[in-house]
Image (cartoon, rainbow, N blue to C red; front, side, top):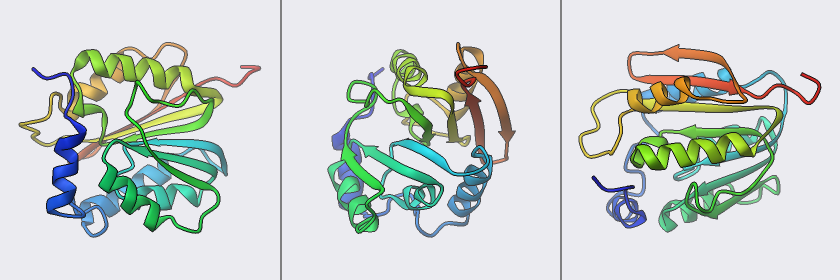
Length: 195
């Protein structure tokens, strides 16, 4: 089994269709985005990292709740589109990076992994999950959301990913878990500096 799906694979998807998952238009995505925003901790978030931002649809929504957002993706075409979508926002940066090897150190008050952690094998998931846990600030949160339907060519399923996150989240509290027919959503919180 391959270690991860390549940046070239995603680049080809975006070359064939600028929005290959209908992120900007589907009812599934609208429902998932609403649930994602509702699952955020209350109030304004300080610094946030979105891993696998794609064309920036969720990024634009997250930016409304964050003082500063760094959105990353490995596919150049996706990064270009996200930059255009978020143009003029001084509080948002979009960068081409791969997780976990090019993950910024943080700390971040919020890290969002939406439909991205199943693109690597179990070893890569372990490395990424470790790096994410290390990058979340005291009092911060990690939010993971993944499709639970069939994914015949992805290395892992959404069920695999969320089972792993729930079984090993050292230093974080598993604060929220939602099982919807089409997706899974989990939030993990790091206790504050005094907690």
